Length: 155
Image (cartoon, rainbow, N blue to C red; front, side, top):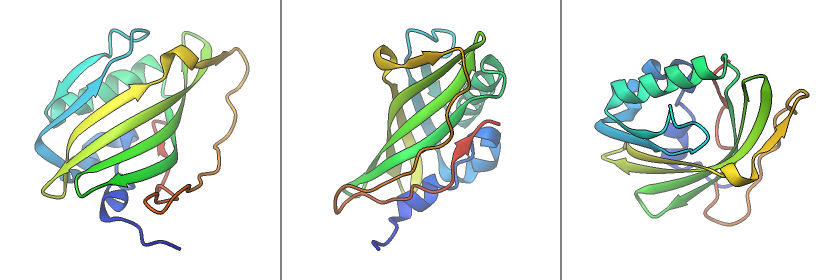
C-alpha cells in the first residue's frame, strides 16, 4: 500500500458539516470558487474563511441538510495541488440529485489556500426516489492516494 500524502491527510480532516472546526486547515486568505448555473444563489468567489463557512451554511440550508460528498479518487499533482473526484448527493426542491464533481485544492505553507469546486451539472442524475449509498473508492495509478479519508457530509 502506498503512503498517504500529507495533503490527503489534511483533506481527510475537512468537515463540511461543521466547517468552522476546520479553520486550522485553511490559509488566512483562502478562496473557494464555486460556479453552478443551477444554483446561482450559491455561486461565486467565497473569499476568506468566514465566507467559506457561510457558503456551506447556505448549502446546508438549501439542501435541507442532505448534502453529502463521497470522495472517489484523489491525485496529488506536484507539491502544491490535489485533485479530488467526488460524487455529491443532495435533495433540492424535493428532487434527489447525484452529480460528479472535480475539486482542485491548492496548498500554500501546508494550508488550504484555494479551492476550485467544479460540478458536472450537464450530466447530473436526477430522481424522485432515494439516493443510492456510498460508492467504493479505488486508485488507478502511482500518484493516486485512496482511500481519500472520511466521507465529507452535511448530515
